[in-house]
Amino acid sequence: MISYPDATVVLEELGEKVQHALGHAVVLTRQDLEDYRAFRPDWVARHGERSLANWIQDQLWHHVTVGLDAVEDATVHEQGVTREVMVSNTYRLRIKRHHLDG
Image (cartoon, rainbow, N blue to C red; front, side, top):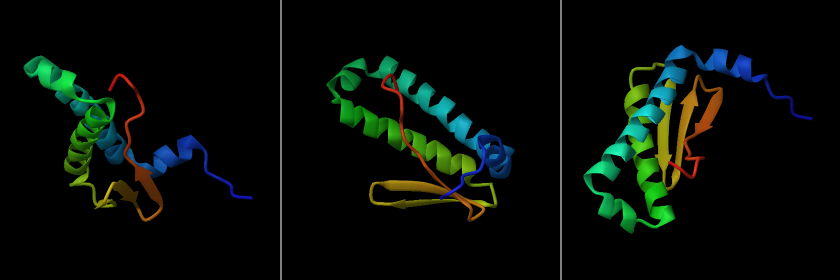
């Protein structure tokens, strides 16, 4: 049976820099979406659900890669539709949108 570490252990091992970079990326992506909706609401309205999700994913990935650029033990990897963050060769994180409201 596989035993997984407690969430508090994982967060501690990820470290504050990684946590901050990921959280800040979400904040910046939400701002991007608000700006996009304000700047071109007609363009946003034309998106299908999947297209807008892809746009959000692209913005989030950009902010994650920029935010983690200075974090030594974090690397980003993109291959096709798979985007992952490796931290300390221990944790592999997938970057995804999980809320329908963006």
